[in-house]
Length: 165
Ligand SMILES: O=P(O)(O)OC[C@H]1O[C@H](OP(=O)(O)OP(=O)(O)O)[C@H](O)[C@@H]1O
Ligand SMILES: O=c1[nH]c(=O)c2nc[nH]c2[nH]1
Ligand SMILES: [Mg+2]
Picture 1 (spheres, rainbow, N blue to C red):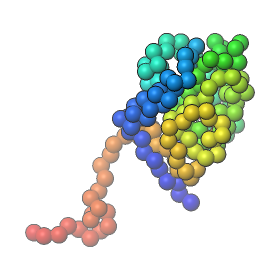
Picture 2 (cartoon, rainbow, N blue to C red; picture 1 turned 30 degrees about the vertical axis):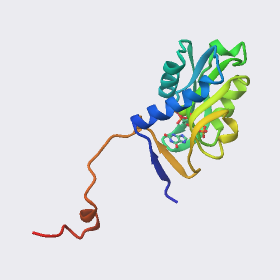
Picture 3 (cartoon, rainbow, N blue to C red; picture 1 turned 60 degrees about the horizontal axis):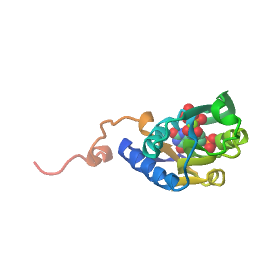
Picture 4 (cartoon, rainbow, N blue to C red; picture 1 turned 90 degrees about the horizontal axis):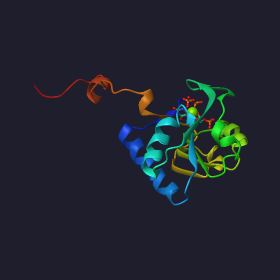
């Protein structure tokens, strides 16, 4: 079955990122933030700005090649947060889908608070805080993966031309 798509604009991502920050400010203060690259970088920047958080670490997990899932590989560990096992740290990603990435990172930082902007049902149990849930068969299209393009008028796309004149 063809996947459905949920298109997220820059404006929406900013709004949803701020909504996440409102939830997280209640749970602070935070020692710092670990962004799961690459998708977590922009949500982490939005949340860090709102929480006035200056200490940003990254962890890099490579799982997907386009829409195909492979074996997760930790390309860069979250060095600064490892000793405390993530206690007092926020772990930020754009979304959880199957929860594979989350499980790999949570194994390294079991005491961190894991927050994402979007969540699918299979990954939901791995997240402490998220904003919007979409169905498992939905592919979320982020603004950095898309660009606006011309779309034919509905009448032309249906092949029945225009009316009048
Ligand atoms: O819950 P999962 O099934 O693991 O999927 C979620 C992960 O997949 C995407 O990252 P991806 O591995 O595509 O890398 P990227 O962030 O560098 O684009 C997304 O940013 C999450 O990190
Ligand atoms: O851009 C993305 N959208 C998704 O829905 C998704 N799930 C895993 N990885 C993803 N990347
Ligand atoms: Mg990612």
